[in-house]
Length: 194
Length: 162
Image (cartoon, rainbow over all chains, first blue to last red; front, side, top):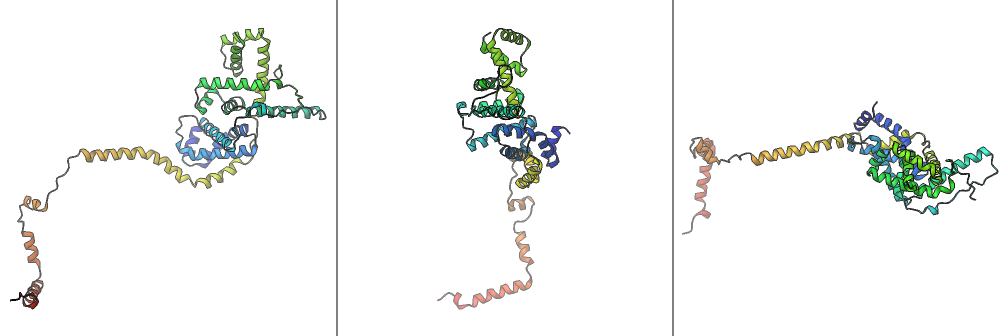
């Protein structure tokens, strides 16, 4: 069934139609919440609240944008509110982000590789968390969630030019901080900081 | 082209948003600039790490946990209907108000006619109605009225003192 039809049925009170929409978008909403919170339980709670909000707001959705765009807008605003309430949206200096050690040479090579990859991911996510909010949001939407520029522009209600320049600045900031941990060959350095 | 401009083009290129002429300029610059080649490698590495953060399996039984919350929070299906239709009804209601208001405002007001004017228009005697009422009284009522009238006349309290 087409998405527009599902939305219309959900607006008319069909739980089955709304369930289909939830099934389709839940991984994306959850993943977005997780990018911001880095906590699975909190991300799950946020995703539930986002869908609850969306359900209550369905009568006010007139289809002027795609349902997905509308839902992402609700998600971003809800997650930002949550972070502000939790006091975690406070901008922290990237210098405050703790570094991770990769010096555990006693593990097997495979385990060490996996561990390092995971640790690098965590490190990058921490650096993203350390960005000022407006940069963190845009990097999350584009470089983690992989949304199109046009969608980001609609979700954040920013002009495409602003999205472009803000994203450029955010990426430069991130690379500057991550440079010591990134290899010149396009992979990640084996880091032994500790 | 300087390195700053090259970095901009480089990011567009990684995003797949660089057109042919700019791509050629960038390629030429990268060939000659080891710093920008290093930057390109670092960006690619950074993006691959960022993308890895996307792969996260959600917690199970999401809908089963959500559905009762929807029901509990809302009881809402009828409410949703009401909200939906009430929003549509607002403009219709306003249009009706304007229409009815306009009709009352512009329509010529009907003249009120008094009862006597009505009787005159109908060419009827003004006192005929009262007469008819008086004549309709039963003979007993008239007898009683006369009796009370005579009692009043005999009452000393009502007689004027000489």
